[in-house]
Image: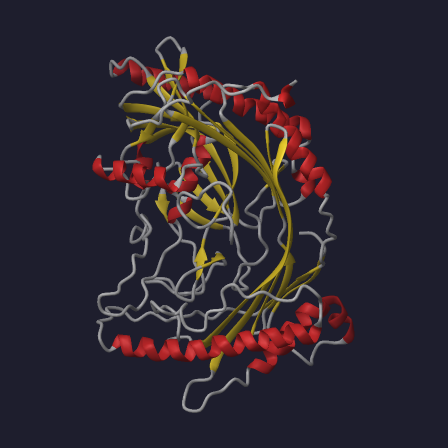
Length: 587
């Protein structure tokens, strides 16, 4: 944790109790928010509830992004903005204006921006207006919620908000060095390497540098300021096989500090690796329907655990709705399965946002405090193969009242969304990579199969277009697929009894879900580490914008006794009529 100034747990009075030294440390932004929040305690309208809880948030962002293709810059832009969030809760912890289908509709402040200058009076003025709007909306929402409850049956009483102890976490602001020229040159030079792979029809390299400071205060006494920076190099490319099937691949390198991004020679190796994979896919045969043992290794293993376990650890509460207007609220595959075994009894999973590094690798999921001002702790979510805990925010859900500090994204209906951080998949019984492959081949021989499968990479986060995702979802439903759309395997190899491997393309999972994990029969003695940027969805898109969260998954390779995969069969687009022209930048 860099530049720590103050870390105290306990009740803190806002406003006038700060001495001059603390006032200087906190700066004009934190001081303006704190004093306007303190004044907002007096909000009142005749005949309606007064606020019992108010929170202020601010994201102060300096960003730069450049995109290049074949050595030419496609776009380059700098971003400077301040995004405020204000929430006012009226009523009390047991019943308030949230958790209602229209909670986010009344008094919304979406799209509001703040002045970029540190003007104390102007900042207070803007938060005064935003608070007034949010308060009036909260009053309207709680009245509508009460009216809706007269027409619906509530089967279980659950509080609308949980109490939490006040926290103070005020960290120093980091110096900002955008280095726009350096990032632009990096994008240009990395993308130029694709010129040497003419079979690839499209490619690009994206670099993003984001210096962000997060502020959070509430009327319970919590006061927070910490840097939340993110740096990314994303490589992606696509091509078309002779039969018209599109093939693609992508890689993302992410870090919380610019110094943790690998040096340019290492990034160049990643570009060549991706280009080589795609070139091999173009000449690889199309896969066939398969049911049998599968070895999931390298990046594919943590990617699989991220989607099947990580995306299901947060519980969703259904809001109060008007008759006939119940919204489609996605549910977790693990909901109601506390204590159920979903993995072998020799496997555990821990979510640990407190770790910033693992074996020299900077972990992307580290964060010191969540969006509700709750300090997280390591949490064992799967113990001896069985579900032990879920990721919780301050919005109670059935069977759970308090938060464990996992509110990392804005959510719906006045709540925050729980998502995982650093997910550590641990196996107490392990085998070497050679033993896992031998076990796979032994099962292939015993079942009389011509080959087994090894999967080394998934399309996660996905590069699929919305249209492709709709087609995949429709196909999954027609074949009795999973409850959620799962990532498509990108690097799949047939492995024959003699150990020979053959790359194949055009395959997807059938019926893959959390229950499939019970078919794991062995795990490796080495870890695979995978970082990615998510947006709270089970299958996040690559390069997603808006509010995002960083994640790292550390997992061993795993051998499944049985998985099912289908050959993708669609009407592929026609090949280009004439060959591509030569690229001058490759000379």
